[in-house]
Image 1 (cartoon, rainbow, N blue to C red):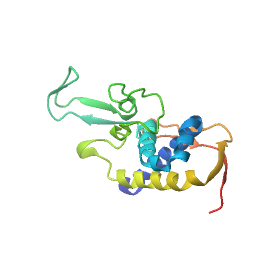
Image 2: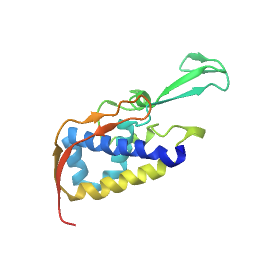
Image 3: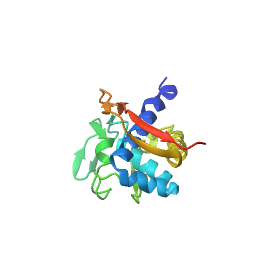
Image 4: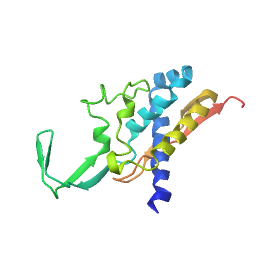
Length: 170
């Protein structure tokens, strides 16, 4: 069931969150409209920015030390993907949405190692196709109401993102 359904909420949250970030940062939307070749990096930044999977719990398989913190085999670990994607040691100005961020692809929204998301490439491709086809055709776009969030602590994003837009003819 998780293989069949996992990508729906996460990918739709990244899509709506990415669109919201572009609308809240019109200079970034203008850059993407002027340089459609930025879409791949813009998608990585959207994935970093939204981090639809908020966290996971894991159990340490062996004793180790991470950043000076001792971790014993069997300890539970709370992995906050959102916090990791905002780590100032990894991302310069992490609270700024920047579609030209040189290391946006270092986000860990899809996990890491043996727990890496099976659908990561599909999700990226869906986001690239949506924004790659939509952005060049936008004549205008604006928020048409207040965005609302899902009430969740695990996988989340926008419940609604009302927008008003016009497209150029195909």
